[in-house]
Image 1 (cartoon, helix red, strand yellow):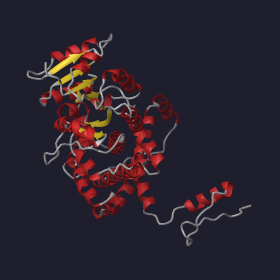
Image 2 (cartoon, rainbow, N blue to C red; image 1 turned 180 degrees about the horizontal axis):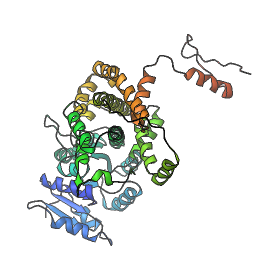
Image 3 (cartoon, rainbow, N blue to C red; image 1 turned 135 degrees about the horizontal axis):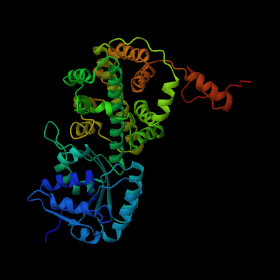
Image 4 (cartoon, rainbow, N blue to C red; image 1 turned 180 degrees about the vertical axis):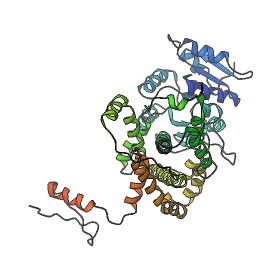
Length: 465
């Protein structure tokens, strides 16, 4: 029997969807899933529901699975990130040969990917940290794919990854070689961080509108936005969510206000701290989810606190629209700045325009704005160097100030909008109070300071007491 072109380990939601995508594109495929209690049916069900003509073999034994693959073996691991990845690697190693390729398609931390890459390279095995975005539907129909690995490894896996990825408006695959080692998972991590803030912005806009409007009315407003440059996948699904009814009741109104998270948003914040750059919007979105988890405490305090809220007035929709446009731009700016800093620190030479391109389809943050970002990063390193982006922010400053004021009047948490505005104010302020901070540091720790008209490499200390 002929060998399979690639193997997939793990037939969960993403693993099975990607496997069907691969098989549908005509690649001979081997799939593996454990036959342990509670999972024995997974492989059987998958094999029973294949479309006619798909070349797929199923295995629950690692040796037989490995033997079914052509060399160099290409194995896509689709299991939960963390220690489980290391366990699978150790199980596979005795069965692998030099030049075989392991691809981690989960949401692994980029530092873990760096470690695994170094470890496996010493054993002659190539390791690929591969970001995959698009959820179940994207995995099945075409996700955005972000592989980080050596150029040699990418050349071996490019035919299949580029075949199964989504296509941009020009018909080009939404998959590109990101750079070395953990770069692919880093870029996916930032994608998820931007996603966190985009979701929170829509949630905050919805909450402000909800003071005076029904779900149907809010959906109508968002539909109008969706016909403009604000068009995005997240806005599209938010409209659908707002309109969904069951038994005459909006499903959204039955959902408990506790949001989960899988850690990738907080990873972006930690990476920002490590690299000395700013992603206040992502961190605000993460903390908003954390606060939501304290449901019982929030309920208790809401009863004991009698808020002084002004009489609700209708929100100026055009003002909120401008504020939302402002905040989205700042969010994307902070995300791309984080990648820019990582590129310099880790010598990845990331192509931000190309990253924007592969985010135009298949992924969760695909949008009209991302299409425009391709051109921006062909010319500049930052949105703030682009005249059109800068003019948008300047013209919308009054709108975001008004929207923040509206949120205060209605006593509504508006963290991500606040974060966007505060960042903009700080970045466009000539003199910040950091002189006092530095004086305080010098007072209690003799950390020294620089003077306004002195050379940059000259430092001073004052005997404060």
